[in-house]
Amino acid sequence: MTRKPIFAANWKMNKGASETEDFAKAILPKVQHHTFPCDIVIAPPFTSIPKAAELLGNVSSVALAAQNCSQFDSGAYTGEVSPMMLKEFFVHYVILGHSERRAIYGESDEFINAKVLKALEVNLRPIFCIGETLEEREAGKLEEVLRRQVTVGLKDVSEEGLGDVVIAYEPVWAIGTGVTATAEQAQEAHAFVRSLIAEQFGGEAAAKIRIQYGGSVKPGNARELMACPDIDGALIGGAALEPASFLEIIENGTA
Ligand code: PEP
Image (cartoon, rainbow, N blue to C red; front, side, top):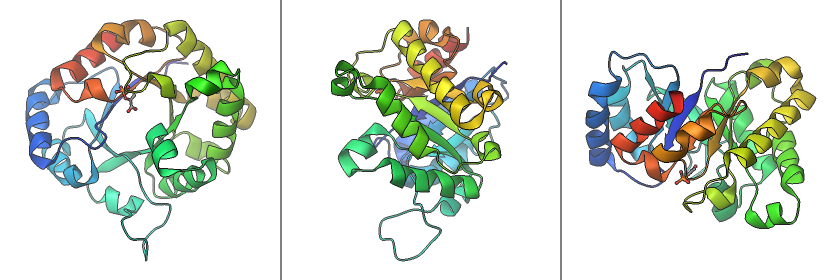
């Protein structure tokens, strides 16, 4: 089974509209009229999405993502943005369950599941994030945590819906810390996550689903990580803020 790798830039709460314009203009000559052996996704903050859509919306090699969405269609939910609203701006993916949202905003597996289901309902593809904290890993709870996150987070997703889901395995201790999981640690976790998908959805679905690695991915470690058989791309924070380093990760990771 060959899976097309997917490299996604998670800008977090960085880059307003003018910095988004600078980034888009810097990558345009490299991505316009080019075909890549991977999918490339950029996730700006909500308010920068219109600018990114204006400049990159017609570039077929790049897709846009949001970093979150509501589990509702519309209504009295102050501060929320619905999946349908995102779709008006050429947004095709949405990052859900990022560890920062779990830890800082208290998002539970059940809450994330509701968002995954709503996103799929309107054909927005979830980049569904999972991963253990250092304490959980050191307490030998890696598999227990991943099993809970996958089982609950993807509950009631249809087999067809799963085809639109990308999983991002992001060990919390590696996010923004400069500490990357070794290729061996990452591969072991990815293989386990794939086995969970096989249990829940069957072997064919497990063979097809793309599982990105996230956690201090940089141009220097992308090649080794992406060479692992169960790693199908990367979700990148800090190193995706600079156009050159994001493009270098893609180049090295697909070499
Ligand atoms: C992330 O935010 O998902 C992430 C992986 O960040 P970083 O690459 O900075 O560790």
